[in-house]
Length: 175
Image 1 (cartoon, rainbow, N blue to C red):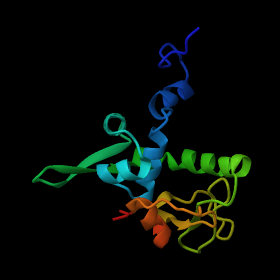
Image 2 (tube, one colour; image 1 turned 120 degrees about the vertical axis):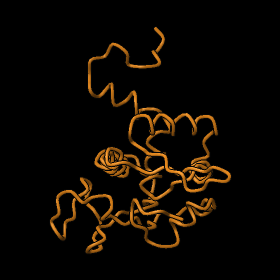
Image 3 (cartoon, rainbow, N blue to C red; image 1 turned 90 degrees about the vertical axis):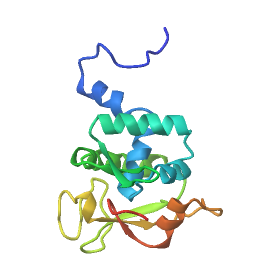
């Protein structure tokens, strides 16, 4: 039997979530939005995603209220994409999934680390600060740092370069 293209008929919250964020590129787009990527061209360059796929995923994320489109230039018209409060809640899914993958499937040191900006301590796998005892460090209070797992030939797109150059607070514009 062929695998269906959606979860229609599934009365399940997880199935509804997968319908929205379970597509291959979607969580990577959201991850980049946490990094501070906001513009179409920067998503395109960092993700190596086909243009049509990116346009479709951004539209879906805007319609779902995960991203909001905001005009930053009128002539020619240019928009940027910002995480909404609803979108920012996905950090509590993305970070533990990242941590789980690092523990169980990593082939080396992490490319990036996440630290509590207030004290500089690396977050634990659940997103807590072991030093301060803060149980749920909010994305805006987290810095992403270059990790020790830099490949021999690192990516040279503007997003990758900027993330290597200096610690960067999540949700702040990267450029």
